[in-house]
Image (tube, rainbow, N blue to C red; front, side, top):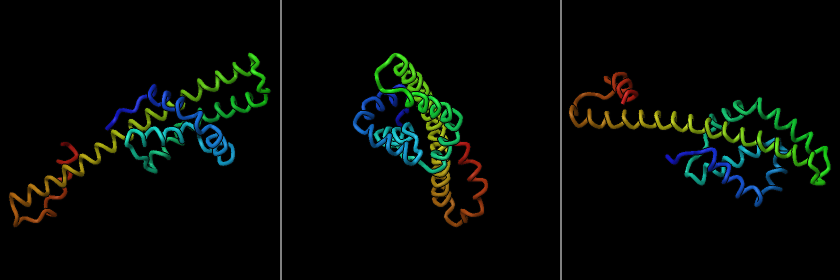
Length: 157
């Protein structure tokens, strides 16, 4: 599995965001979607990884508290005129710091989930391999009689 890193995700976001900024912001404003989550979907795809519904749900829960802060900062920044004043620049910088924190959370949660998915996949594959071995070694013995024992063993392999 390719390693997901916060720095690579940040660099990916910096390179992609300008190309799709208007669309990302429109989706954020109209539907309440999280720009970082949408960018993470693209970053994961570039890494050859897919997103499962439980992981997406976990993202939402993990980001819920920081999302409130980001939205508050964004609201305050948007109230200022985009006159490139020092005040506007300061608010934007603070918002980007929060955005980067969100990205770190997404990477950490995605890594945890990927590790768990790999463990589950390995356990399933080990169980399948054990069944094939058992059929080869004792073709007359029903695999079902040893399912519980094989399952326990496969989880430890």
